[in-house]
Length: 223
Ligand SMILES: [Zn+2]
Image (cartoon, rainbow, N blue to C red; front, side):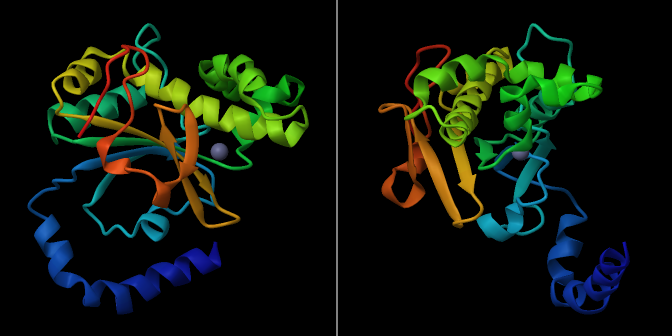
C-alpha cells in the first residue's frame, strides 16, 4: 500500500498542478467518444497504452472483459453501456482482451474454479468461447488453446453486446462502431479484430477506424 499512497501524494504535488486546467475543465462534465471494456488484470494500463487523458475514455473492467447477453439479469456492464450510448453518445466501443488472461485460463481449466463460486458464475458468460477456441486454435498445446480462447472471447462479447437493442440499433444506423482487440502486454503489441478475415492482426496493418462487422446481426458496420 505504501507505494500507492506515495503515488497519490506525488500526483497531488507534481502531476495535478501540471494539468490543473484540464481537471478544472472536466468539472463541468465529461464527453468521451470512446468506451473501453477490458479485463481487470493489473498488467493492462489503458492510459499508458492508448495515450489517453482523463475524460477521453469511458471504461468498464471486469474479470475476462465479459458482457453478459441481454437474456441474463441486468448487471453493471449493460448498465454502463446503456448510459455510455444513450447519455454520453459514445461512438466507438472497444472490447479488449489480453494475453495470459486468468479468466480464460480458468475457463479452460474448470477444476481451478473449485471454491470460487462467484468467479465460476461470472466466467460462465464466456463459456461458448471454449468450444470456438478448439476450432480456432492453430495447434493443440495449452498455450495455443489459451491464445485462441482469448480471441474467441473478444468476438463472443462483441456478439453479446449486439443482443442489447440500444447497441444493435446504433450499429445499424451507423451511430456506433464496435472494435475487438487483444493486447499482448509482453510485446507491447495490440492486435485488432478483422471480421472480414476472422483474424486478429497487428493494429498498424489494419483500417481500424472503420470498426468490425456486426457479427451477431450479420450487418456490416463501416465508418
Ligand atoms: Zn484477463
